[in-house]
Amino acid sequence: MGQSRRQFTDEFKREAVALLASSGRPLTQIAGELGIAPSMLRNWRDRSGGPNAGPALRPNTPASAPHSAPDPAAEISRLRRDNDRLRMERDILKNCGHLLGTPEMRFRQIEDQRDVWPVRVMCDALSVSPSGYYAWRSRPESPRKIADRGLLGDIQRVHARHRERYGAPRIHAELRAEGHTVSRKRIERVMRQHGIRVRASRRYRACTTDSKHSLPVAANLLDQNFVANRPNQVWLADITYIPTGEGWLYLAVILDLFTRKAVGWAMRDHMRAELTIAALTMAIQRRRPGAGLIHHSDSKSVPASGSWAA
Image (cartoon, rainbow, N blue to C red; front, side, top):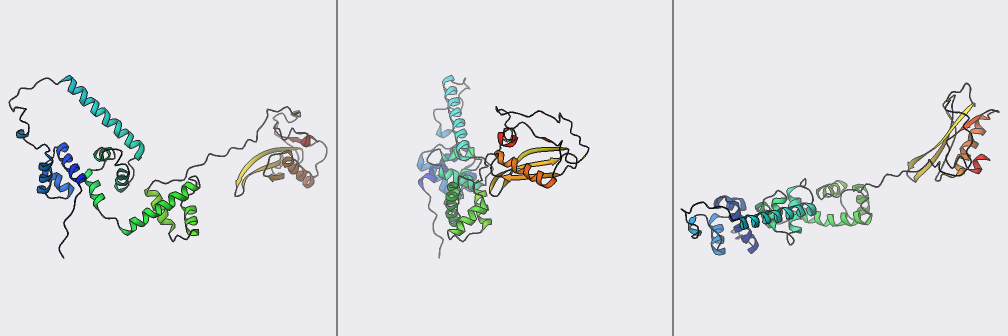
């Protein structure tokens, strides 16, 4: 069976002739880049009435004409065109993303935006050749690429539904629960190719220091003298917060200054007075301290509360 004749769209022909006119390179070289016969490109050019190399197509410009000074109006017009092109390339890069993707990713961006900007301008901005784009566009998609495009839609759907906080493991689990038979590595590859990333959540910062309150504050008996001669002479207390699988939890700890060991602790999902009271109760029940014990904490609102002082 003979090979079928390749068909080219009118747009492809116009872009090929425009590339020939603007590049200044030989016709045979342009034809080779586009994968077509030089005679075919020559016929397209002749039918379009486009410019041809040589002085014959510029009869109004004599070969012996002396060099004249540049026309200021023409120079201003050229600068405006250059400025418009630079502005267009800037907008293309802003909307189409960076240049770190594969050529196929850039071709896909050009295909998606071809009704917005000229193809040749987008190719220049994204550092790909128009011939490569048209070769990619005329190449039939493989079944795997078609399946990847459908998978991409499913990934984007799950990713958007969870506010871009799901990565490949969770997206894989959700798609499997929906009945899709797809591997996690394939999901990771599609996400990487299309720049789909997990949006980093803002770091949680719990406030465990609230010294701006009107509650009574006990005298500072320790006065920065962090030295103890025996156990149960000085206890130090503080509160921190810990990330867990159930969320953030608050931990109150009481430390014996002499032994440097925790004598009491408590963990809650809140930072009310009951948290520190539970830690102090545990320390008293375990150590049974005598008279003269100094219990030192900062001046936060929880240690200064009436329940704690009681």
